[in-house]
Amino acid sequence: MIDAPLALYQTTVPRPWLDYNGHMSEWCYLLLVGDAADAFFRFAGINEDYRAAGHSLYTAETHLHHLRESGLGDRLAVPLQLLDVGAKSLHLFHTVRNVATGDDVATAEQLLVHVDTAAGRVVPMPDDLRERLEEIRLAHAGLPVPPAVGHVMGVRRAPGRAGKGGPGGPREDTNGLQP
View 1: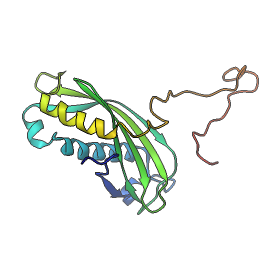
View 2 (view 1 turned 120 degrees about the horizontal axis):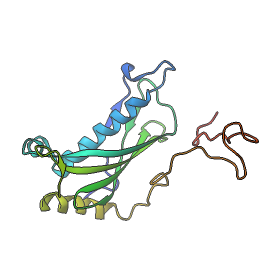
View 3 (view 1 turned 30 degrees about the vertical axis):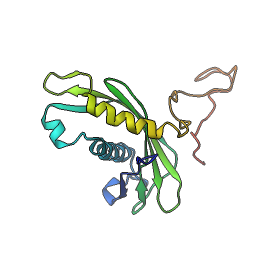
View 4 (view 1 turned 90 degrees about the horizontal axis):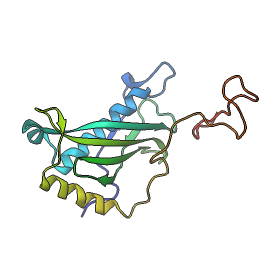
């Protein structure tokens, strides 16, 4: 049985991850998501032996959404949902969740490509890996698609409002953060 979503990675926020505001720094969310993706890769069979044989997954794109602050000692879990699998790529969604409060503190959507590391180019996955990933995708198919998937980044403006210096100026958007 494959869990949906997969809960393969947790960590505690260490002091070096804090920024000058005393909160977890933005680069650490990417590190955290990368570590969670690595745990998923091992679960799927992309381990040290697989990489030593000349293949790996490379991140092509990542979209991070910062929803709440995290601080020193916070225990963070990163459940992962496999959204889709192609012959040469996969689409993941991570939710960074505070274990104590249950609050989602960030999300990350990723597109990864399968690479022949010696040739330095994208290549199809071997059938056994693709089949394993497809099993996981099917187990996750019943999960709702998270609202942040495919989110387009940009400054949101009220209808009829011009940009910088225009009438009324831009509408502030806090992406759900409380002022």
